[in-house]
Length: 87
Image 1 (tube, helix red, strand yellow):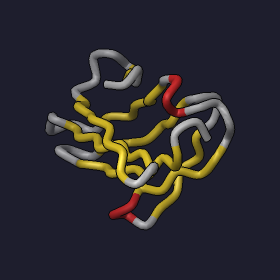
Image 2 (cartoon, helix red, strand yellow):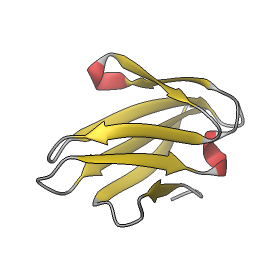
Image 3 (cartoon, rainbow, N blue to C red):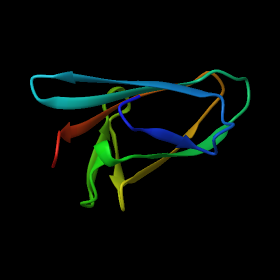
Image 4 (tube, rainbow, N blue to C red):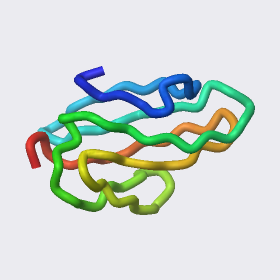
């Protein structure tokens, strides 16, 4: 999806990206009943370190080296606000 990949590649995480008013959003879901720790990687994330907001959870993560790492509980969904394209 838009040059984005998840690691490990066999993780049961499905995701899609959306753009609204210039802001990029990543919606990701764990399709299993087990916990998973994953990394999202791709040029669309950019390379500059910055904060990423998990919108519905009121928490921030740090995007570093074009990689966003997070944990997913069973059947958990995360909605990330990644910022503007190219920033």
